Length: 286
Image 1 (cartoon, rainbow, N blue to C red):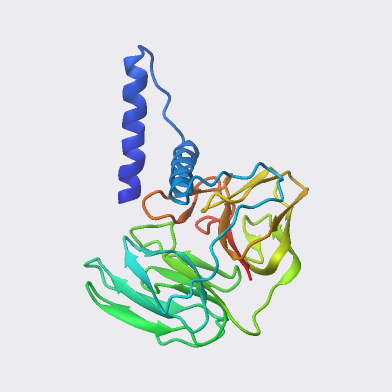
Image 2 (cartoon, rainbow, N blue to C red; image 1 turned 60 degrees about the vertical axis):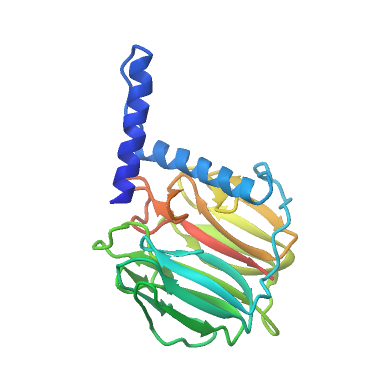
């Protein structure tokens, strides 16, 4: 619902400006709306981070990213059919407090492949539940009321009944610790199906990710934190190095955009080959 209000609001504003100029306005496409929203959202993140600039396409330089939080307790809030923050870089042994501010009941369920098991967590408005990260590794989680795990794509898919459809209510934790290490070089494929394979990669500090594009057109890689900006031509490859630890949530801007209300990556209907799955991935640098 809020996404429809956003698109309508942009269209009304666009029309009003053009009318004032004495000519008829063309209606912006969904791609244009999401692209504009993504740029504004990335700009806001950059300012909040102290004015970090985005690296030029093809650059191997990435500005510093904060190290894993050593705080004993961190909070993830369920609101507006999303988890905030959506991605978190933590140290093993930390405790995560899941809480909710909405009237809507939420739940937290681990996706397959987690390094340690959690019980399913039920959240109601004002309620908090704590979960200790007992082992290092990657934890993917989602709300099974509004999303489901797609094993064939290794991705969380939004249920059509979700008010935020096609945005999936999901989250990801990268927990550092003894025995959890990455590789120096990792290859990721942008598949013809409109997904990244693998979806999540773990590399060592100073390591490099190389993307291969199997799509018919260019794939413009951008990240939620604004630190990835790489163009990969059709049938080509591109690489980027990551000199500092951190987590990077990225996507192909040709087929997905950022929802400025939640920071979720959203597949563009009629454009994304894997719709409703968004063409997104995560890089955990340890």
